Image (cartoon, rainbow, N blue to C red; front, side, top):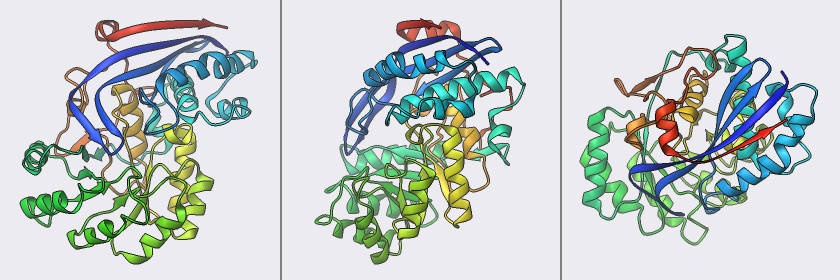
Length: 368
């Protein structure tokens, strides 16, 4: 394909409730959408970078700038572009995986639409629906936490993930386990909030039969993850640490984890995410699909990814109404704790023009 036009569209999407983690509180998403037009058709991608560089070094304004000034010009300069050529064409630009993932996804969407192939079948999906979990932020009180968890259990979510930090860990986990019983699939996510001095609190979580403890330590501290893995029975899962298949293989061989959270945005795109899946499968390590509060664009691609065979745990692929009163695509609706895998060409979804226009805060169109 020849890339003709790239549109960088910003939308403001309020959350249905504030979402607090160890690195801050979100009340809305400033979303950067990528719309590409090629000589064979069009495609969409979503950048998962957040407004501020607190969760990651990437942030929305930075992603917008790197796309406009460095990534898109390199793709325009190429005689032709396919999804598999994006990473090599952008290889001299260091980092910025979330921005790279967004443009690669848009090009892959356009390419697959042109050939009437679904995202799911291209990636290697083996399921027509995927089990869904939900991520629960740090609450103002235990009572508020239990009320929120109860609402998600009632809705049918098949796994609950609690955000934790030092001082908000053992007691909220205990309260949820005691209130909802031993059959609730429960896990926790620390977003790198702990260190060697506070790790004793993580060891105390062993009594609650958790599925896993996600990313307790800094992303570059594989040693501390390895130490914790040797000291507790609960599985240690890596998230922010895993940026590529090579890094995943190294972490597994070090014994730093026994589960991996796959986020395509963090890995530079869905093609590398599939490679991470394949490496983990070969090494006997299960994976699951993480989320970044995506709109229906990003959620459609995540659901397709989560349908691959080695995704063994429910992902953070929640229904649209978990985060948004109105999604930009037709909403993803939870049924029996699962979401259907889109089967249409490309991602199988399109933004609704009226909703998209109402939420748009800016559009920058770049021509080849």
